[in-house]
Every structure is written in C-alpha cells, then in structure tokens.
Image (tube, rainbow, N blue to C red; front, side, top):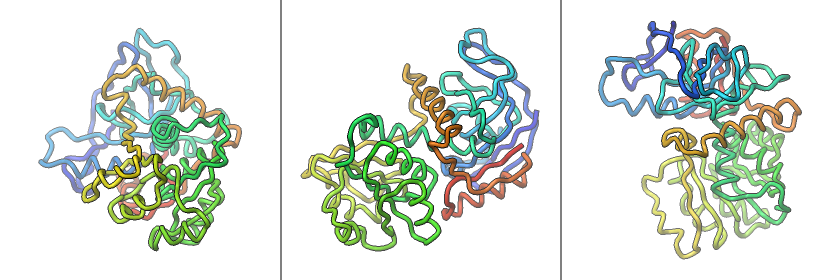
Length: 331
C-alpha cells in the first residue's frame, strides 16, 4: 500500500513508499483513509528528527476513513463503518492508505457532515475538551456565567474549538486575534470579547473592565506573554498550556496559588490508560455536535488528492504559523 513519510527534519524529505498492509489484532481497527488533517504536532515531530532515518516516519494525527478489518476483541465497530479519530503518537499516523488504530480512541463519523469538515476536528477537539473539562475542571452543566477565560491564539486550530466549547459551557470568553478576519472568526465562534496578542494584553483586558481572569489557556509560545499571564490570572485560578515553557518560570505563579496543567492529547494512548475510551466518547459527542450544527467545523483550506505534492503544500501552510483554522487533505 502507499504511504508518505519523512526521513529527516526538513520539509523536502517527504517521500512516497510502499508498505505492507497490516492485519488488526485485539481491539485494533484497520481503516482505509479517506482524509487527513495537518497539525502543528506533525511539524514539531518532524523537526525533532536528529539523524537521517532508514525507515520513513509516517506522521498524521487526524484521520477519517472506512473500517476495512477488525481485531478479534473489537466491540464497537464493524467492517464498513465510517470513522474518525486523532490517533496514537506511538504508532504510524494517517499519511498512508490504511491505518491501524485502537477502537477506544475512534468514533463513528458524523452522518451529515462532509469528510473535510469532520476530519479537521478530532485532535483539536480532544485537546480542547481535555483542557476545559479535565485540566480546568469546568462543568459545562453548571452556571458558569461569572467565570472568565482568556484563550491566547483563539483563531488557531485548538483555540477555534476551545472558544466554541467554552462559549457553550456558559463562560465569558476573551479570545486573542490579530487581524480583522481573525477577530470576526473568533466572534462568530462564540468569543464575547477579543484582544490583540501583538499588543499589551494587560491593558486591553483591564480596559474591558476585567481585572483578573479565572482561566487562561496558552495555545502559542507562552514566553512573550508570560508576564501578562502572571498578572492577569486570578488568585487560585488555573493556567493550562499545550506548548513548552522555555524561559518562563512556573514559580512565578506561586504567590497567587495558581493551578498549572500541561495538556498533551496523546498521553492516554501512549500509556494505555483506561481513560483512553474517554477520547472515543468525546468524539462521538463531536460527531453529534457537528451534525446538529452546535459545533462549527474549523476547516479553512482543503487540498483534493492524497499525494506527496498536496501533503507538502498543506504542511507548508501550517508550518508558516499564520493559519486560521485547519488544513485538510482529502483522498
């Protein structure tokens, strides 16, 4: 079968190669891929390759497809089911014709929503859901109108769905965006207020009549905003991030007794935790939300044709760092 991989840390190291089609065992599914989405983690993973690889590394952590075969212990899916998922960092990704994936982190694909709109959503939705409902411990069924959240990089992939989920949970959402197009984007997704992360966040938030923020999500490089985060976070508030801290010091949050949390969507699958199945459940809810219109897909660019050229072009767009929403490659 056809697969696409990288052999070093450069974008021009993408190669197409043949790989044997695997047979699923246990709780694994074999899925014939119909579409993929490109994520920043794909780029970060490639850039960590130190030496030239003998076997190409297959990236890709958003997939949509049809179940082609099932392992002997599979409970929830059958051959022919349309599914979508974000994948497992310890296994080959979605840049291939067929992918092996554990059923516990898979969901039935939306019935009324297109492939491109569906496949854009799993990784970012799982990340945002775990951030909001597990790390920040927000109960969407509670009255959260007196709670504020600042989402730094609100127009990005994770920010675009985090804004929606926070809005649906009843919080006052302050999102950052830097252009008129992105400001309108995050407002349409449910942001109550918008500030520009290229300018003083403290002044902008205070000018909105907000002294401190209950929850802050760091969805881009935190270092340029660290002093602002430390100043704006409410005592006993929570700061959670998906990116690294290189220069900033966590101890700066100590005097406010701020809760701090990392979020890495692949943790549950990497360590084979019982909570892996939570991800499948989140995605089943996502499918319902997309079909009902409660959740808006954040796809903004689609490449038609599952080939080396389109994977490279899509990767270049994401790697540029200025994308609004998600980039998809459709078979």
